[in-house]
Figure 1 (tube, one colour):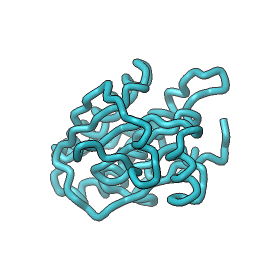
Figure 2 (cartoon, one colour):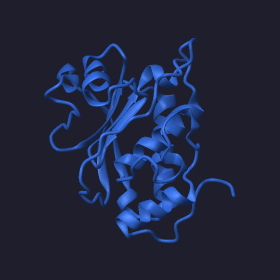
Figure 3 (cartoon, one colour):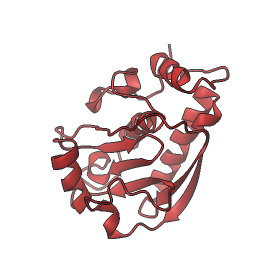
Figure 4 (cartoon, helix red, strand yellow):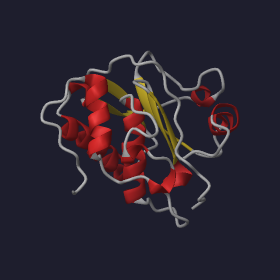
Length: 189
């Protein structure tokens, strides 16, 4: 796996989430979908907030234009999207040269899009590194919910990211949304 791939984000002004419908790319396989569902549940259970309530609509087909410069980040009919892309997709080159100026493992725009780069979480034999994919999604969903780099241990960039929702990240989520009910970090103390 390329160690120079980093997690990157693009963020927008706060727009207030309050439960989101997310169209999920049909290219995710069942193993990936299981992890995706778990991460969504983990954020909701940790925060106790309806702002972390996400409804996944699996099996959505995105057309190739979704990754072209003018269409990035690829909103479809005003819905948020969760997309699986490859380093070979046109949008990857655009994002890594024009938007982030570095290779990325994933990206997110608040309340709008989450992108996972397949090559960043698959091993050389094509199997999924489930622990890393889980951590990658926790981080990107943090951005989706309004968190920035430095807003807690899950919001660190690169492979040093903590693989759970830590107290600081949770506190920052709750400051943004002010709707947390009995928040509990998923990291062991």
